Length: 138
Ligand SMILES: [Zn+2]
Image (cartoon, rainbow, N blue to C red; front, side, top):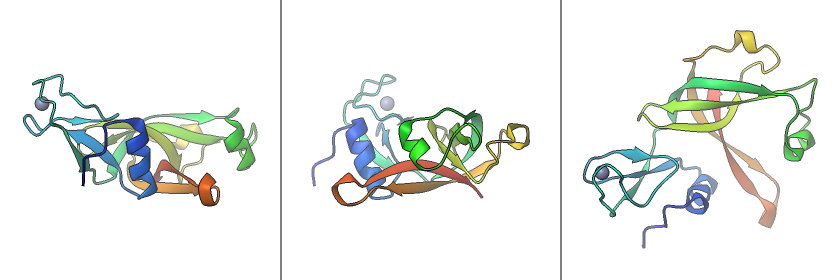
């Protein structure tokens, strides 16, 4: 099977398959998220896809009170915020995602360093079906 290109579209395709993938340099073993096709450290252009463990910890977060239309449709609004954050994965790369299992309306109770596990949110039906990256408090 040919290697999918190192694009956001390929990354999202892996999400549909419930895989959290990063690009890895076979020479210096550096991981890249978002994925990239060329390693800036050693200029290797034979990067490969590597599946991540999906374990990490919360590095930063924001509670969103006025969100995307998509999120409003899920019932989130000014009175019911949701949380997005930056997750530092055990492999050392960082990614932004929805954070689940936290009280977004009580941000003072959300702790940096909280252990998180990857989750995949499926929204829509049929052709419209999409999978979104999220992390859940363990
Ligand atoms: Zn490299």
